[in-house]
Amino acid sequence: MYIEASAPRRKGDKARLMTSVFPAGKRCLQFYYHMRGRSIGKLTVYVKVVGGSMYPEWVKEGEVGNDWNLGLLSIDEKKPFQVCLQFTAFC
View 1 (tube, rainbow, N blue to C red):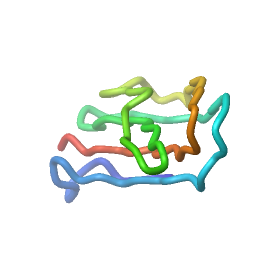
View 2 (cartoon, rainbow, N blue to C red):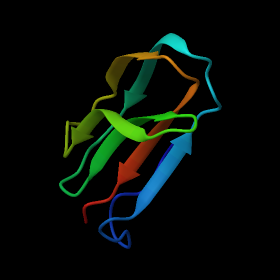
View 3 (cartoon, rainbow, N blue to C red):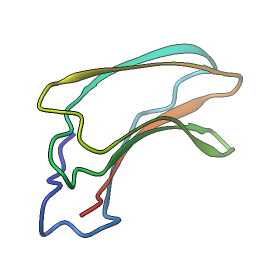
View 4 (cartoon, rainbow, N blue to C red):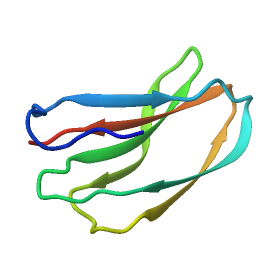
């Protein structure tokens, strides 16, 4: 997923990538992210329980350099769920 973080991006603009539904149980999510620039914004990984709420499970905000970084998180849900990666612009 890519979103341009510089102008003409507006503060609060969002880009989302939503997975298909996973069955209940334990899962490991592994992904790489690149966040460079003074107005880069925030990357949030949400878990959305089917028929329930969506909550943030992982957040990275601001510049982290010009490298690709590994993001890892463990998810253990009692109900089927989806994962949502959301970028929010700060410029």
